[in-house]
Structure formats: structure tokens, C-alpha cells
Length: 208
Image (cartoon, rainbow, N blue to C red):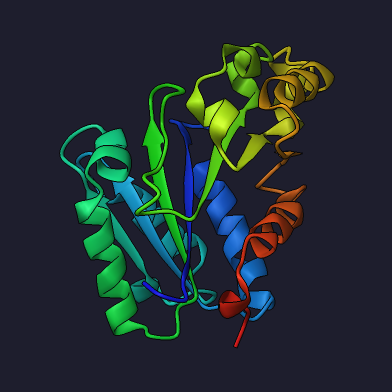
């Protein structure tokens, strides 16, 4: 996977990882990059199918593949990423122009991380519906990810989440590491996420 930027997108179930990817891909394409997507589910490829439907006419559906992990997705992206490495290698074999490979994986807690063998950049996604206490719960996903995304800012007033508190606590526990607030369905903040990804792209990964 030389000359390919590999981006892991993780976070709790329902935080909006799939929606973030669906909003991010058109921006990456607009910037001139060639994208592939690998999703992880335990028993289905539902997330992959959802991305294919949402990005119909934008991204070739053959560039989106689903991995059925058969066990906790954490294992498949952190402890033994062999299935994901194989899926990524297959995509690159079929589409040699890919320079950005997005790996999506859910989890039911804050301990999700990506093996450095699998991902060069790790984005962790929280959402406001989980409560403004979530950043204070820490966990490696929150404190150690390269970028923390706080998603679904549009519903914060309806779930009694204080965005100022979430942003303040996230900044504090992350000790200056970047935090971006987003509404992936409307696109708010998503271009900032794309710019962050671009900032982590080595010279060899620039658009062809």
C-alpha cells in the first residue's frame, strides 16, 4: 500500500461514521484524489451497502467493500487487521489509482483504536446524543486519536448537550490535539475534516 494514505474512522455505534465518510468522499474527489472505502460489520455489509446507495453516481460502488469480521470489530482493526489489510490490498489491485483508503469500524466503547499497520491517520467520532460528558470519559479513542470529531451538532439542543462544554472538555483531555464539530448530513465542518486529512498527506500522496 505504498503511496496510499490510509485513514481509520472509528467510534461508537450510531455516532455518524458512515455519514461522515459519505460527506467526506465527494470533497476528497473534488480535491482530485482517488478513493476506496472498507467498512467493518460483525455479520453484515450494511454500512458498505449504505455508502454505495448514498454515493451512487459519485463513487464507483466497486470501490466500496464490506468486511464481515465475525467478532468484535476492534479485533479486526486493532489486534489482527489481516482481513482489512486483505480487503484494502484487493481494492488497490483492482484500482491502482487509489491514493486514499478509508477504513470504517464501529465499536461499543471508547477503547477503539486502529493498528498503525492498517491506518496512518485515526479519526474518532463521537456524537452529541451520547451526552456532553463523553469527552470527560476519555479512553484512547478520545485522547489518542489524531482527530476527534464531535458529530450531530444540530441535535445538541434536543438532547440537552452543551456544545461549549463538549468542545472545552475535549480540548482539555486531548491536550491540544485537534477537535472538529460537525453535522455530517448538512456538511457543517466536513471540509475542515478533509483539510485535516490533507494536512496529514505526505508529498507522495498529493493528487495526481
